[in-house]
Image 1 (cartoon, rainbow, N blue to C red):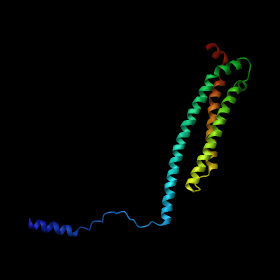
Image 2: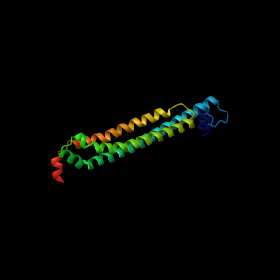
Image 3: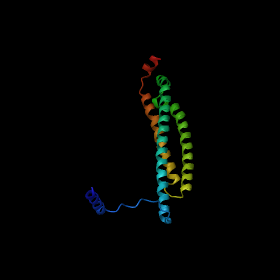
Image 4: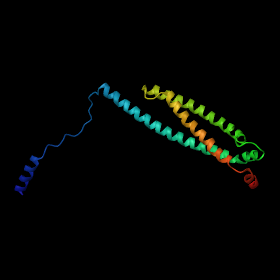
Length: 171
């Protein structure tokens, strides 16, 4: 046993010294490093906010798309009746388009105003020229406008190809 103890001690002596334990430093951090950390934190926050906002806009626009498509589907008999009375498909669906376009225009204007306000608050709070409120508002307005056009045009195009005789006979 004495020889084994001597052997263990000699093996231990050949091992490298363990690294000292990590300790939090209270040394002052340079102003530049602190600013870089602040910028990285703000950019990460903005990315998370943009992703969450994008998901919210997607869900809202899909819901509005569904409601618009349902409104067009419910007014299909009206389009068929107008076509049966001699109106062109474009003229028969004009009242549907004008009514839905008014609601989408109100939603787009309100959304643009809210987006403008939120973007201004974020830019003022972060003091970073990472994003411009005008660019954010324009991008959101373009996306929602494209969804609005698709929400009105796609179901309406389907309803224009309905045979008025078949639809009126079912009713």
